[in-house]
Amino acid sequence: MSSVRTEKEAATTLEDALKPTKSRDADGEAVVRAFKGGATEDSAPAAETIDGFHLVIDALKLNDIDTIFGLPGIPITDLTRMAQAEGLRVISFRHEQHAGNAAAAAGFLTQKPGICLTVSAPGFLNGLTALANATTNCFPMILISGSSEREIVDLQQGDYEEMDQLAIAKPLAKAAFRVLHAEDIGVGVARAIRAAVSGRPGGVYLDLPAKLFPQAMDAEAGRNSLIKVVDPAPRQIPAQDAVARALDLLKSAARPLIILGKGAAYAQADADIRALVEKTGIPYLPMAMAKGLLPDTHEQSAAAARSYVLPASDVVLLIGARLNWLLSNGKGKTWGGKSPKQWGAQKFIQVDISPQEADSNVRIDAPVVGDIGSCVSAMLAGLGTNWPRPPAEWLAAIAERKSKNIAKMAQTLAKNPTPMNFHSALNVVRDVIKANPDAILVNEGANALDFTRSIVDMYKPRKRLDVGTWGVMGIGMGFSIAAAVVSGEQVIAVEGDSAFGFCGMEVETICRYGLPVCVVILNNNGVYRGDEVNLAGGRDPAPLVFVKDARYEKLMEAFGGVGVHVTTPDALRKAMEDAIRSRRPTLVNAVIDEGAGTESGRITSLNPTAKKA
Ligand code: FYN
Ligand code: ADP
Image 1 (cartoon, protein in one colour):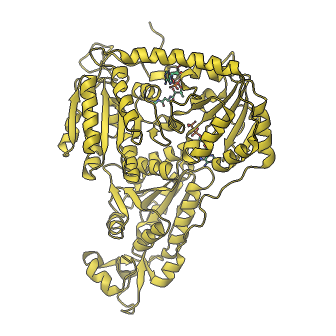
Image 2 (cartoon, rainbow, N blue to C red):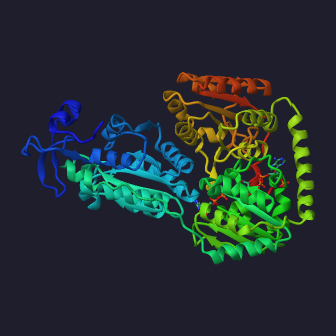
Image 3 (spheres, helix red, strand yellow):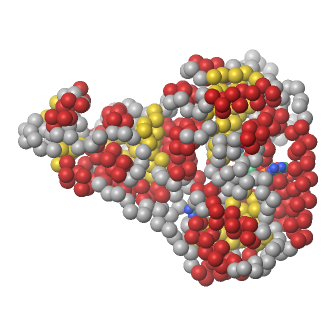
């Protein structure tokens, strides 16, 4: 359907919305304007006009954006209706933060900016958490929020949902723009798209004041003002001398290691990355969201020997992974340093699109700046035909550690304790993912996250979405919805019971859109574990515990999905297999030992504790 209408067409299709309404034009002058059809009462009746609503929709469509994740309300209610009418998929959420998380995950999975649409002030702020998280994770996303009357906001005269949203978004976004006039919508959307996906991807804020939407302009001029962004994420070819420097260093290594991060997964250079790993024969370590870039069962994976390879390595090639807290900032004990601040003996090669990333924590001896696809292909080309395999002693030492750890893990997974624990439950998830390698695994929690990461193998790229760089709780349902919507694949969300609490209401969204999402809650009655008592001995529960034996599955049933309460691995397996077979929204409340779990999972050291009396 074309979004350019004559006044007559607009009057029939948008009858109620076209009631003449007293408003002010862009200069604050009172005019009688026919909303959405865009023609004022005194304009020529046959003139074809287009309004701000349709210019926004057309600008997005022109740039191949097909889905909006959002939550309708003032002033963007009609935008959601019209977007749907014009063929965009509009997924409406129950809370903006989850719509934002969905947009971020969609951006990561597709390399197109995920769009989150919210109302003003509070809705904007709810979406902003997700935008900041997207920027932190280098996911491309655009948060579009309606906003209140500029004149009133700027004079702080107390408008409905008054807030200077642009100023607030700026420090948390990669870029932020505001559009005041209909003829600038095309440029505004184009700038937002370019900012989100070019260079290091990130979150962009686009502020659209309420008065922009009903603004009308000549349809042809409007059409001509839109921009189809050409080459939104231009390739960035690395310098040849940088590639040569990196390869020389890598060749000199006695104990080389490759670390693949979620930037490598995002880049969709899967075949070349695999070829680089396999042609060099260098052991690699996947960061959490890079699991599956090569199958976790690959013989060169050193994941099961992580704490050995990091300090023992002498040259490390980082591909799309930052030396941030998840890698102990490249120093300290993890890397063989004697004290927390001491550097190890490694030399680093870093492949990254951001030139500023190098040296952010320790010295980067060979930065290779460019997009991962171009960098990896240049490195591959430079390998030549006689690249030496890493020394046999290094490979043997890793293999030995790895097989010991894998055998230990197999032993633990073979146990079938009563009550069920993280391992016996996740052993089932591990089998289910192995049998369904195209399923997307979403994972959040503390222990629920850490155990799943090391127990559940992934077999294909971009099949694992998790808490990311911030370790943020509450991404589960938003990420699951996005994964199901953009891929059409089965989604399995493994959730700690605490993490699920941040986003649980979105099971209604999952049911409403009939998405193939199977949520598995590893329920141990609390944050970390559920067996703590109130130290003061009073009637209130301890701060970290929840209602005992909560029936989370009934939440899914309330909206027409399938809820299952399980206490054994066999019942969990059956429930998951049924969910996958039926593709119905399913929530499995997997009850595990409330004493299972450690404080903060594997990052206990980050959680200061008071001295025991
Ligand atoms: C890994 N391991 C395995 C396997 N894979 N053993 C056997 N088989 C397999 N397949 C081993 C691995 O060698 C480690 O043992 C251990 O399992 C854990 O591996 P992991 O998970 O890779 O390593 P680790 O040390 O936990 O990684 C550090 C980290 C990670 C910071 C990258 O903890 C992380 O991503 N944390 C995110 C935490 C978070 O965001 N939490 C949310 C907030 S929670 P060893 O080699 O013996 O060490 C709020 O409280
Ligand atoms: P992880 O948490 O998995 O270690 P990080 O989020 O720390 O990964 O690192 C991702 C890195 O990847 C960022 O430094 C980012 O600049 C980089 N990156 C993202 N996309 C690309 C790309 N297409 N080409 C090159 N680098 C990229």
